[in-house]
Length: 128
Image (cartoon, rainbow, N blue to C red):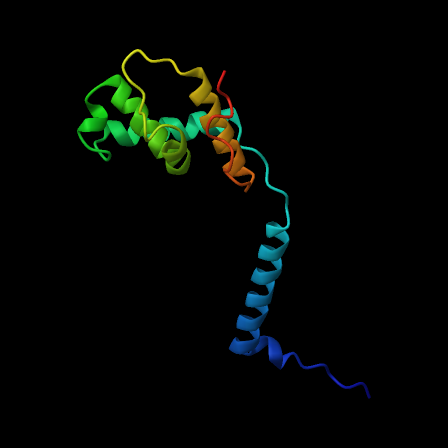
C-alpha cells in the first residue's frame, strides 16, 4: 500500500514566513540587477508639475510664491536638491535670466543621478 504524503510543513507559520522572506529576497535581488535607465523628459515634466503644485499649495513657504523666478528656483530645488545645490544654489536664477549652460548642466546632473553615476565634473561642463 502506498504511503500518503503529508504536507504539514505548509501549515506551519514559520515555514510560511520563511518562504515569503526567501521569495522577497529573490525578487529584490533580481530587480537590483537591472541596469538603470536615464530619466525621461516626460518624467521630469511630471515631477516638476508636482513640485509646482506643492509650491502653489504653500508647502515651500511664501518666498517660493513671491515671484515667477522664485517659484522656478524652488521647483528646481524640489525636483533635485542635489543638482540645484551643485548648479544653482550659489547663484540662483534672477528675473529675466536665461542661462542655457546651467540649464544643460542641471539636466545632465539629473541624468547622471538617474543612472547612479558620479556627479563629479558636472559644474562648468557646458560653459561656452
